[in-house]
Amino acid sequence: MGRPTDVSQAASVVPDGVTIFDTTLRDGEQSPGISLDAREKVEIAEQLARLQVDVIEAGFSAASPGDFDAVKAVAEIVGNAPRAAQGPGGSQGESDHREPPVIAALARAIPADIEAAAKSLAPARRHRIHTFLSTSDIHRRYMLQASEDEILAQAVRAIELARTFTDDVEFSPQDATRTDFPFLVDIVAAAVEAGATTVNIPDTVGYALPHDFGGWIAELHRRIPDIAAKDVVISVHCHNDLGLAVANSLEAVRNGARQIEVAVNGIGERAGNCSLEEVVMAIRTRADLLGVDHALHTPELTRTSRLVSSLTGYSVQKNKPVVGANAFAHESGIHQHGVLADRLTYEIIRSEDVGADGSQIVLGKHSGRHAFFKAVEDLGFELDEAEAQNAFRRFKDLADRKGIVSSEDVAAIVIAETHVKAD
Ligand code: KIV
Ligand code: ZN
Image 1 (cartoon, rainbow, N blue to C red):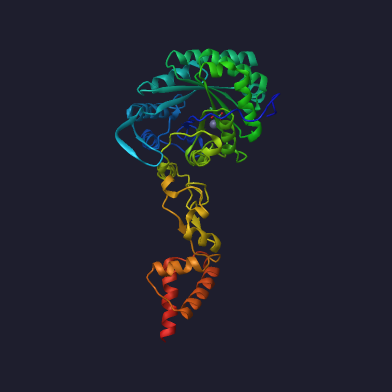
Image 2: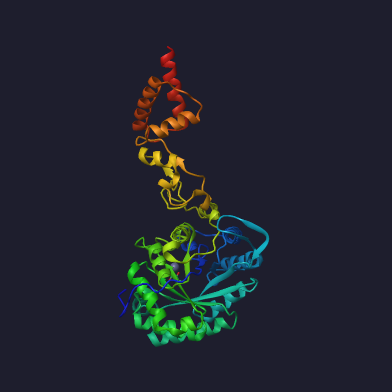
């Protein structure tokens, strides 16, 4: 990826919404070893609807008969069930219902795929065909053996065909970030002209760097006035090969992208996709800087993460931002002291805003007196000065040997100490 000419700073930020397009059931399912059947896809899609995701990419209909059936089942069931409207903080009006989510399916830019996608999506009240074609030199040479002109013509034909089935068509120039920028501009302009309502810029191999990527998004808007004139949404789909998927997505939003493609727990091809929970909490937490928000009901995040983890068999690492077991856990004495006084000293997200269990004070060798004596008090013990000194010393010895000291361990320490004294 290189800089297009005249890339300037972030485009002006307007206070409006970012569409959250979830691809857990399509790109997420492309993680090695994951295969979800129709029942499992419906269960996850129902949870995504509770989370208030805007678009659910349910699968790749032409990939297998099973995926066709799964997309159809999601379209029938989730694509027709209104979502209960919930405010960001969890308020829910009984009579207030939002439209069902848009259900999308992926299709290569060939008629058979587009027709399969259209057929499987037909039962959904609102549906989108997402068609894609590689545009980078390396993909064109080794995978497609096609010239830029041939690729452009094929993309236009695919979009026009998709538009005969639905007025909601998304086009992705695959490997966009390794595509010659002038050709990317040409194909995006042609896609808009052919009727694509969303044009997605995939960082297919996670190659982009944030500032550079943001510049490309701004420059596409500048060079193609029809994006604004026709209300076309520029979307991004960032892979995480360099650990930059969330950063790249945020930089794209700062530069005018209004859809981001994400997967729960960041699953997906290779190192995965932009993690849903991380990017939506980054946007919500720093809306002050970004000037945009989304409509997700974030208290459903932890439940969604756990469901996807259990149905895919992909566990979530403890230190995963937002939904990891340690996201609200504090081990060191200095941090514990602060959190016990006011959790905002070391937490930038309220645990209830992501549906997590709350702040946890974990006792270990870095813990201090505040946390230890709080645990003693919570267990209902009272110690005199000498008992407290000795109990704290025993606790530090045990923490050195054991790592984490449980409340049962604390009780045992206190009992041992008070018995010693009684003896
Ligand atoms: O990574 C990618 O390029 C994709 C496209 C199909 C959008 O998943
Ligand atoms: Zn992808």
